[in-house]
Each structure stands twice: as structure tokens, then as C-alpha cells.
Length: 211
Ligand code: DX5
Ligand code: ZN
Image 1 (cartoon, helix red, strand yellow):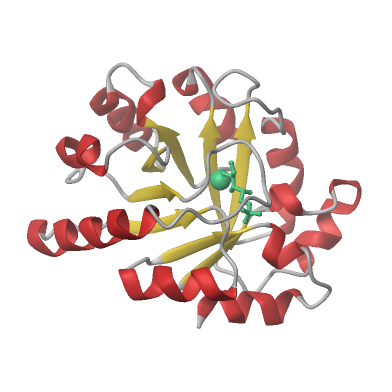
Image 2: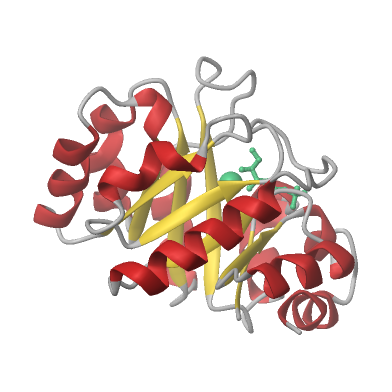
């Protein structure tokens, strides 16, 4: 089990110090919101570029953008290692995945809670990760939606059947209790924002998410 602290819940006035407290996690989850695809705004490539030299973790960039493809280059240049976009936001999903691979980064697909997991099926043999949203995207600190659990199980079955390896990542409302449910269901990576950054003891929280 790998852990991806979501920097959305970090103290942005001291971002470098905040990142230093979560070094035991394998990934950093970076939420990018445009005020159109979701009703909130966050950060852009300038901030990703600014923190890149301070971390050697995987920069897992979650684009909640109405036109994600228009920003692929900017985030890759800023230092993203993998880029996840929402299938609801892209006209030609295969073309977008191929573009990311040609540019040398991993490609992920994300689903809002109400989008059926079957919508991903045509792309599963091409992608590096699936980001299962367990809250409506837009804000940290929301409660976990249990509807995510059957989706995780279904993806795990598909993964076993297809032979193509991809990471099943779960994002939203992860805490000690919901992390256990997701691990049992078959998640490979768990994103957690408010649970990790809401405590002074980040290492302990990361371990609670992990096991
Ligand atoms: C929500 C974001 C999440 C968010 C998770 O739209 O995609 O990554 O930071 O925050 P918590 O862990 O607080 O639910
Ligand atoms: Zn996210």
C-alpha cells in the first residue's frame, strides 16, 4: 500500500516545510481545479515547479479541469510524473492517454462518484492508474462515499482478468477507518488530505492510512 498526501490540505504559506513532514509517503497528490469542472480554484504549474526541487516523491497530478489537455505540457514541464484527468472532461480519451505517454509521463483516468466504472472499460489496457473518487471532486474534508467500494472491487477483478497492471487509487474522505475498507476492497494507493495534514503527527497518520 502506497500513500499520497494531498497538498490541498497543507498550509500553503509554508508549503516547503509542510512537504518535509510527509516524506515517508511515496507520492504527493496535487489537486488542480479551474472553477469550471469543479466549483473551486487551487494552484497552477508555477506552484508545482516551485516545490519540485524539494521532493523526490512521485508528483501525482489530478487535473479537475474542463479542458485538461490544454494544460498537459505546462504540468509536465513543471515536474509532474503522472497526470490524471477526468474522462467526463475529454472528447477523445485514447488520444489524451497517448499524448501523455508520448510526452513521457504516466496517464491516469478519474471518475466522479456518479460515473459508472464501466465507462473506463475501453481504456483499461492503456492506462497506468485509475483514480476512484470517493467524494464529489472540489473540496477536501468531505465524508467518504461507500459507493466507491464496489468500484474498487470491480477494478481489481478487471485487473486480474486483463493481465494489464494499473494502480487503483482512491481519493476523498480517507482516514484510518475508510483506509481499511479500501485496502480490503483492493486499493493500491490511498490519497489523504485532511486526515494527514489535520494532525501534527503526519508520520503516524501516514502509517494509519498505510496499514
Ligand atoms: C477533492 C480532491 C482530493 C482532496 C482529498 O476534490 O481531489 O484529493 O484533497 O481531501 P480529503 O482527504 O480531505 O478528503
Ligand atoms: Zn485529488
